[in-house]
Length: 473
Ligand code: AMP
Ligand code: ZN
Image 1 (cartoon, rainbow, N blue to C red):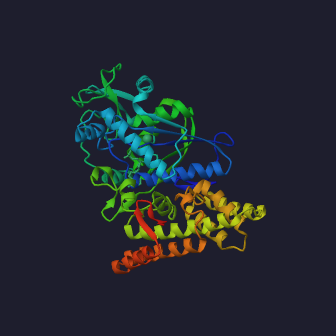
Image 2 (image 1 turned 60 degrees about the horizontal axis):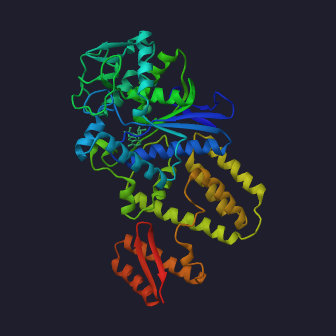
Image 3 (image 1 turned 30 degrees about the vertical axis):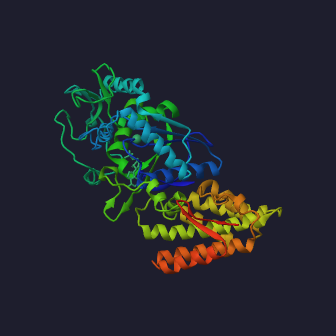
C-alpha cells in the first residue's frame, strides 16, 4: 500500500510499526449538531482506508473519540463552547445534546455502511488521563499557567509547524470562524490544555484538577484517547484537512513533548466537500444531512458512491445534479451485479479470474486509495467475458471495501419471488422511464406511465428508498 503522508507531503510506501498490524486513529465528531455530509465524506474515506487495509490482510485496530467537551467555535480556543451552544439552542443539557447527536451520528454511519471503529471513546470519559498528560507537560516545562488556564508553550519546540510553513497554516486558520487573541498566551500559537471556570461561568461540565475546577482544551483529547488504546506509537492518524492546523499540529506538539519521541508515522487528510458557497460547515446553520438526502429520495449509498467516484485528496463539489447522475449510475451498477447474482445459481466461479481482478483492485487501493480506479476495475470485470458466478464473486469481494451493498437485496424479495420475470423487467423499465420523465419535469408522461401500470394492476409507491411496486388482485 502506498499512502500520501501529509507530514512528508509525498506518497510513501506504508510500513506499519508491527508487521501485519495497523493502529489507526480517527478524530471523531463534535456532537453538538448532526454531522453534515461533508463530515461524512471524511468518515467514508477513512472507512474505505480501514477496509482496504483489512482487505489486504492487515489486522487493524481503529480508535475514534467523540468530542463532547472543550471544542470552542474557533479551533484556536476562542469563541463560544460548541456543546454549550447546542444545549442553549435546544434548551437541553450538554449531556442530552451529546447523547442525542452521538446516536444520530452512529445512525448516519450505519446508513452509509461505515464500520464502527473498534473503540469509540467520548472525551468526558478520559478526564484523569488528560490531567495526567498536562501534569507531565508542566513538569517537563512544555506548559505554563496563566490567567487560571494551562497553556502549551509552542516556543519550546524546534519545529511546531510540522505540516508546512506558517503562511500556509495561517491561510487555513483564515477559513475558520472568529480568531481573537487571548492575552494570557505567551506566544500566538500557544493553546489551552486546561480551562478553568473563568472562561465560561455557565460551563455545565467541569471537573476538579490541580489547577482548579475546569475542563480540558480540545486538542488534548485525541492525544490521550489514542495513547490509551493504541499505545505510545501509532501508524495512521486521520481527519479532514481543516484538522491539520491547529488541531493535528497541536496534537503532535503535546504528544511528542509528553512522549519524548515520534508519535504517529502517517497522517491521512481528507479534502473538503464544498457546495456552491464554499466549505460545508456545521456553523453555517442550514446543513445538508443524510436524513435530508433520504427525504429527497436518495439512497444514502448513492452518496457513498458519489464520494468514492473521486479521490479523497481532491476537493469535491456537491450538487443535486451530480447526485442524480450518481443515483442512476448506482441503480444500474447494482442491477448489473444483482442480475449476475441471480443468474449465477450453482455455477462455479472462475477462481483464477476472481483472483486476477482482486489483484487489480488491490493495485488501485494501493495507489493512495484510488477508489475511482477500483470502481473501474469492477466495471471492467462486469464487461469481461466471464460467467455470472465469477462476476458476482468479484463484486461481492470488492464490496467488502466499497461498502455499496452491491449484492444485497434491499426491497422485500418475498413480494416478487413468484412474479413473472418478464413482468418484473417490464415494470422496472417503466419505473426508470417515469423517473427520467420526472427529471425532465415531464409530469404528464410520468402520470401516463403510472396510469398505464395501474391499468395492469400494478401500483407504484414513491418512498424514501425509491419507487416500490406491487401487483394487486
Ligand atoms: P467536527 O465534527 O467539526 O469535529 O468534524 C468532524 C470531521 O469532519 C473532521 O475530521 C473534520 O475535519 C471533517 N470535516 C469538516 N468539514 C468538512 C467538509 N466540508 N468536508 C470534509 N470533511 C469535513
Ligand atoms: Zn482529533
